[in-house]
Length: 279
Image (cartoon, rainbow, N blue to C red; front, top):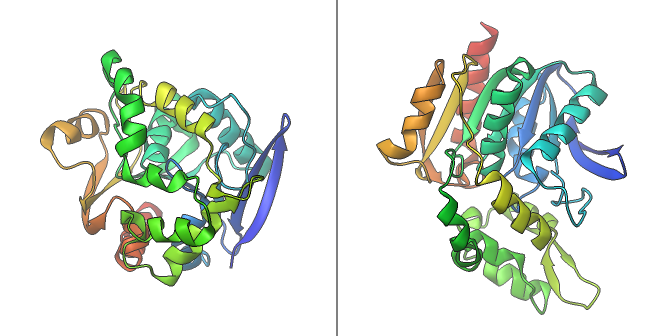
């Protein structure tokens, strides 16, 4: 039901999926190493009522992959230019994991852009201590989802690794489609993720050291906490309650990629929240 579109911004191409049956603007931001197609189930379910845009953020998917330029400020500028291109002054904005933290930074900077904010299990919403940067190389090796970057000797080898990752648990047709769109054959014949190492390194360095929430926001906000997600402790939840004065929290069965492993319940939860904003 979606159409692949693109927008060129200062020699950077932003590729995005668009569902344009409805009118209410909804922007969907994927997480680190993912791409727009992770939102295909949600987009299809909401298409009748919403004008939906799901971009491949720079360094990801089919968008440009420059050697530099992965600060939160730069990526937010891409998104604001995309909204301006669409004629949107504001929108409902949803972000997952790193995309959730990016949305929180953006909401703090430009709250007027947000009709509502949906945070799907954000990754390190608070500012990290300076010493944490020393552990980044270790994180690159141990974070399971980054094992999908490759390289792999063949597509089949990449698929075998993917089937063991949490986001593809169950290996549904949706998950298979998302995985197939996430990899490509490289010039040397190997296979690997479309996500780049340069983007990985700079995003960790910049965004993971910036506080996602730093002032009180009155934006209607939904925080989705998967039962096997990242945000489980009172300490992790404290920034949300401290800074979001109009906050609703929902817990859903599933892991960090709940929209891939439990899409029906996830989509229902999003619909219910968005319907509240229209009433």
